[in-house]
Amino acid sequence: MPVEINARYDGALRCKLTHMPSGSVIETDAPTDNCGRGERFSPTDLVASALATCILTTIGIVAQRKGWDVSGMRARVVKEMSAEPPRRIARLPVELWMPPSVPLEARQQIENTARACPVHKSLHPDIEAPVHIHWAS
Image (cartoon, rainbow, N blue to C red; front, side, top):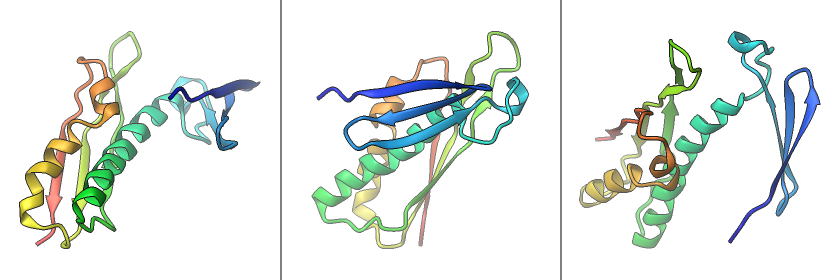
């Protein structure tokens, strides 16, 4: 199902995005190393954020179906920009921390799910996006 998102440039390198189905709003700003003030998520920060939240959400969907409790799982993503032109995202390493409630037999499916989320599959192949999972004991 298509989802409409409207974007408006407000000046001073800031944009406002509106998720039309819900009315939710996100504002962006250019990063300080690219002429902005860095006071909001940058567009490339949103890509990194999309990857982390897509992984968490996709694992959550699978866990819900299987009856696994993944409450409290968390993710960290680090956006690394290329050193040489053209300016682009070069790496998005992701770390996940899983709660102790995750059963041992769920681990392989969770690992597969993390690497198969729609955002991960949508990234350009030149973007390195390794996923490392920390399992609670």
